[in-house]
Length: 476
Image (cartoon, rainbow, N blue to C red; front, side, top):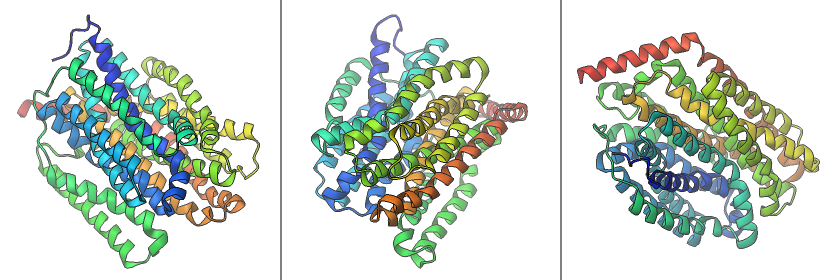
């Protein structure tokens, strides 16, 4: 049941849900700026710093769908409150961590709470605003906060690390969590789905094995070597888990991974764009924060401020993108997003230890344009032609793909530049060229996917997929 929109409560509910998603998403970007300070203070290796980011995003990616199903079954407000409490406890333990191992473990706990916030908050917003127009505007604000918090994360993180130390990036979450918990208890009504999807424990385990095995192999390949039994074994396990997932999921009535969604070209394109785009942006954040502080010797605050063009571009472009998607569809914004990512990667190829600041800022603004033009059209593309019964799953899977892409971006880029971090200067920028070429390729891939996933042929495939699900709904 939603709250009557004539009262002031819906806006308060939206504010509480936005606050929750801001701290969850921002904690990915905030930590990137703090990595050099964390590495010095806790004597962490490059792989330890990679896991500080990836342990968090992997848990978010692996358990988003299950958390949404749990909220539909047990109550969205209840799960939302549990998520806030768990995220707050994880943040406290992160700030108290005495070693990199303890920090990574606390990040996992943080992410467990985060999985109960992001998809559940979106569902709460959707039920609080019953009218289609009101719901669209509210979800637009919610999506904009997601992109903006990711863009502003490095700036906030740089200010906190530079002023109070890296522990502050975690402790700042505590008062926000406390206020959100009070707001949830006072203003958010309890709601459940009319028919909750059944849990899929086998599918859940297989998804985690695929993601964790792949990312662990990439991160630790520098230590063990790509041909070592450890790495080859991890990759073999990940491949076997993927084969098992593809064989098992079609047999379930409520699979964790609904493979029939991929019969829709728009959905497949949205998922692939999410994965490729955030892989590129995750690599950009990881390499750039290291470059600004390690190579150029900037303080965390100055490094964060150097990324201000990203936030400014997102703030300007996101509203324009929303209006463009509403008026003309997602194709043009997604093509622009792919072009901006490729251009940002190409411009970064020329960055060196003494590149003038205006050139840096112009380059970083391209990544902001990418982020501001990619998130809203992804959701629209994923939902193209989908019946209401599939809407929640069709939006949660691209969200999981974004987290997976971020994890892969950090893992791949960290592996490419790890050996050059010690040398610094020209050695780091030369190694970083591999990351930027990857970013160019990902941007061009997004452009191709945008064209393939938004044409007439794609619309026909979405209509066929929707008809299939509607027929299944009638039979169930």
